[in-house]
Image 1 (cartoon, rainbow, N blue to C red):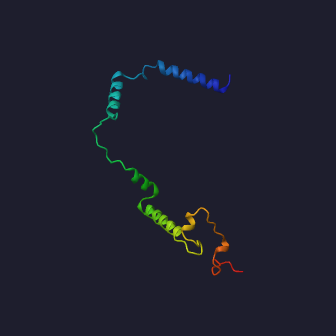
Image 2 (tube, one colour):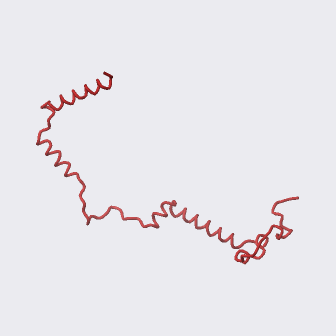
Image 3 (tube, rainbow, N blue to C red):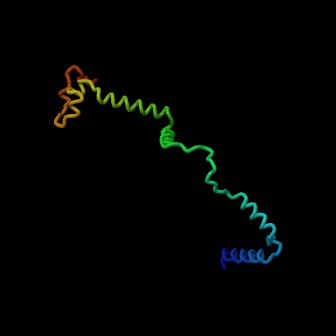
Length: 123
């Protein structure tokens, strides 16, 4: 017989002794009071009950997830600056301006750049 079998036998004997002991049996009046307390503490469903806090809208949840108005303002400023830099490029970078972005057959090579701008590349 192994140690775990001995432990199981000992536990079985203890459980059987607890089942047959009259002192361990709960009185009916105690069980009734415990159940009455448990039922009193159960939450009730009241459809007309107002919520403590109103629900947030989808936009409020999105702004909260992004970090609030300061973060959203920073993202908007970065977006506007990126669009502005993208469409108001200097003639050295886009010789034909925005029209070169729209045309499908336009190709721009570095050789087309004006000779005066070396972009920090010294020979």
